[in-house]
Length: 255
Image (cartoon, rainbow, N blue to C red; front, side, top):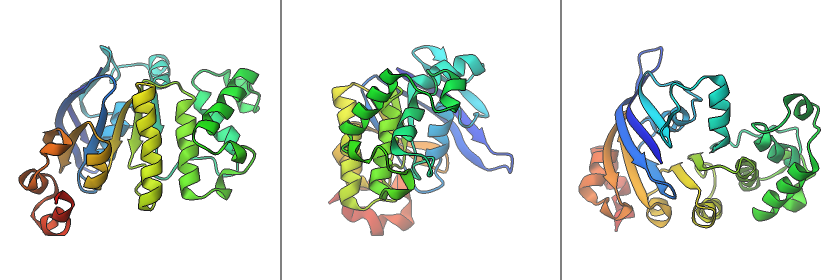
């Protein structure tokens, strides 16, 4: 179980990105985090794996505190937490296979991996991950030769290489068209249901929230303003999350 307690993040410029946010995520959940741009969704996900250090509060994974972990402890914790980014975060000039293998960096010999020397077992595992997301035939291609949807599938295969307990997906389909968005979320759903990987995914669109989420947290101005099932997001709760000005534009998503 992941547990977030009274999490607050204030950036050096004084921006309060998160304010006293608390929630729990049971194993096997597909938690969706929703809210407008700037509501704190990305900051929340980055605090969970300590890409950003919170200002106050605590985060626990199976009763091990992430927020107080030293560098060695954090390296081991991060093995359990895969990250998928909106802008893919691939090494553009490297091959698809190399980008996928980078998911094993937490387990690999740092010197050998720097030289591009990987155990055959890791290479086989990488090809299996690429095959799972349907792009094994692109293994030797440079990452920047792929379409956006294909690059995001490389991001998923890289996360698979960690054999994670949790996947953090930071608006993974924001730059993709609706058809590709569903294909990417279906891979995450498969990991969630087949592998029992907990998924924490930030999304904008309520149709995707209703289709894939098992539980939802709504953020507004860094504060948690909703927690419940996707089906509980009625017009009143929609207004509380997205505000008066967004209500008329997006309320049709609830009909």
